[in-house]
Image (cartoon, rainbow, N blue to C red; front, top):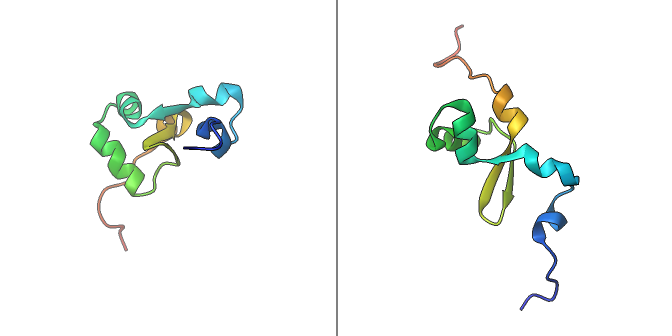
Length: 78
């Protein structure tokens, strides 16, 4: 059994009470951007978004999702 039964969310992060609304799931981020959840997962894997992992859930900052600008596809020109 756990000796300390406090909420891990409040222990693992330094969020103000209103900041919890700023974090969204991958599915919500996909709806905001109009892409699939898998596309968001690929962008996370590439390091394009800051994430917060809590108990197996991956959360993204809503402002980062809205402000994201895709990079030009392909190799950079010389």
